[in-house]
Length: 627
Image 1 (cartoon, rainbow, N blue to C red):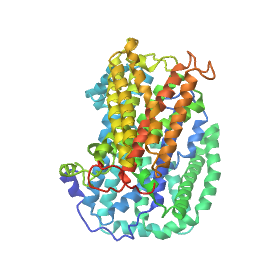
Image 2: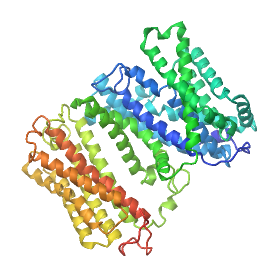
Image 3: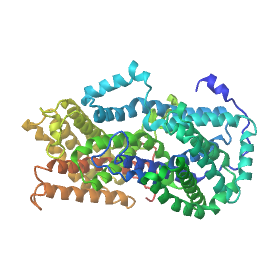
């Protein structure tokens, strides 16, 4: 942060505060709220109101369905974010907190606005405005967005508006905290006023008041300088969360009235839905509707906070640690992944249930895969909201990067290539489809994306060529990892050879694009079907990798079933000219993606084993911790 800005919030002695013990319930609530946000955005794909892209299936009842979470989800997130900021202030000065907030929020915001959001905007422009597709269309869109005319209209941030608001509210809160004793006085006032049932009543009255007085005039714009109802709501929640940390009287009453709050929410929700559905719902200037909305809003929040405080306050663990770290990168990535997934899947006209399930899985798993890749690359971790691996503020400590790496680092880097290879392959295929107007996923083969009829075959051919090289490198990593864990030299060598041949087949096939007969050298890649069995063979002596073994066995069975069906050995006619493309997509998805999962699981095992020597694992297997 610039020194001039930092001097505004210079160091003071933090106000007196209770214990800084971590509240795991707030971590669980934050993770759950962001998970609901992803599901909410999937739901918007099927709404009848404006969003970036829509499915061919839309439903009028989505107006009422979104009310299940819409009134309270973001308000709860702002409250929990305010509480998280308060925990940062223990044993830190305002200057240190400001620097930490800047390092955590500004790089992801800039990265997202320049890299992630334009992809969404371009797809929306193609969908609604007839903007050209293909690589040239995307480059033209970037030139438009960041040219003089585009910048004059402002840089769109889409879902990243939440980061803008968190940053602004953090500045406001730190400025208030800088005034000695002010936060203590606000906290004391809240603790005095919100006793007993008033912890329910008074916030509900406040929410109703701003809904009646501000919402009709300002609405919700998500534009910082013109969003006064939202500021009254979200900044209020942020400050409330900041001030009640450690105020156990308030938390005891929140726990005490959790069942009452749940009952009020259960009553308010159907009434609120009826008010939206019925034409008379806005009668009496919308005051009854605002009252029910405010009641539902705070009742759900109290219920969630109350049950969380009661049952989750001390329930940490590795799952929560993993999800807490993953939440911010998932938030950054999920909407771009979702919008791209809708654009690619929609032409297939899938049944709505299958399409919803596909979008949910692609969005969650795709975002998680991105997290798994970026967290391993120190240089880009801050761009995704992750702390530097060396614990120092950004930019990175270059001296730390030159220090000796931990055990098995070379093998783990090769396995990291194995995690990244499927992501590259999937990204390349998605980009190649976007650059091929009229490509029919149901009837055309993937190889046609690099063939003579493709408009930009270099996207597919170049990407698959690189992915093949990465697969070969990953195979060497698989072989070395198996040798490190079991000392099974023959199995490790065979595994590496199978992967190298598969990677060579992938890369060589792009030198002879379809329909050149030499393109069929890609059949070498099909040898990777045997790799799960070979890995099971190589890991047979290990008893501490049961999940990996189950995954490999299931993967092999699925690939075997797909092979039998697609070769017409059973159920002849199931695969036909009208759907062969989708069968090939399913087969390719399993064939490629299992490699990334297996590489990640092996990487985790290498990370946990206790070495016998300080070498890079060249001495063979070591004793692992129970897994």
